[in-house]
Image 1: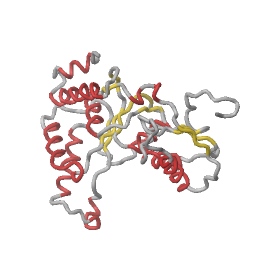
Image 2: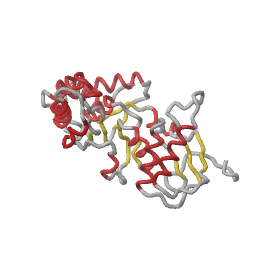
Image 3: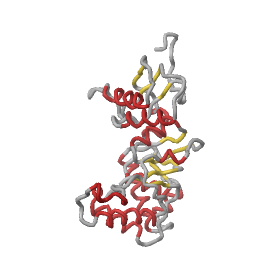
Image 4: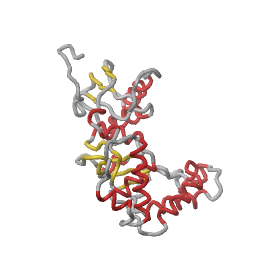
Amino acid sequence: MEPPKRLLDQLAGTEGNTRQKAARLVVDLADTAKADGYISAVHAHVSGVSVITGGHGLRRFLQDLSADGDGHVAIPTTLNSAGCDREKMEEMDIEWPDFLEQQFEIVQAYERLGIDATLSCTPYDRGIDDESGIATWAESNAVCFSNTWTSLITNRESGLSALATALTGFAPRWGLHLESNRVPNMRVHVACEMQHLSDWSVLGDWIGKQVRPDWSMPFGPMPYLTGLPAHMSFASKKALTAAAANYGCAMLWAEGHSAPPPLEIDDTGA
């Protein structure tokens, strides 16, 4: 599996040390995932921001990656939420020495890499309706929203894999990047009224709770929903996919609201 020429150049160090490190990671990830090749990405969303979850190892890693100043993301990239609200530190009562200083050290390192420090777990709020292609998003609710309601396709990435793609512009081609894997594996008919925003969250939660341990779902539950009301607001779409994503749902189809699923449906609707 030969990498694209630009990725080979990055591996050789022609675009600097930072991208060389990221390119090595992309190749290693492709090997681990048994990818069938590489694909260009158009957007990345990086997680791994809180010093509490990332620890001092994350601080050192980002300091090393961003210190030489030659590294910059190759595609538009946004940053996930941080571990605090700096204006409400006292109320949050975070027991971590020098937390605020270390937290924003991490954020600033990402900014040196050219990442837009949106500090939000909903990158789709910025307006992506007209975008299409491959994304690498490391936030489960955003993955499900994007795959379901937009033309951006993304696997459930780790913060590290999303960062590697952000710096190189390339991702291993596998998983939901392949159209053959984007097929419903559950059918859900909604026979109740959906009058309140919370109903959509309950529906997403209910779908996830139907999954049984012995079901073979390598990419998580991917339901096809029928019987939905004629109107779904942006907030309803957000609530549904966010709740379903809590159970590993990376994509769903909603009759009349999303692209139709790649299924042959007979006269009975089965």
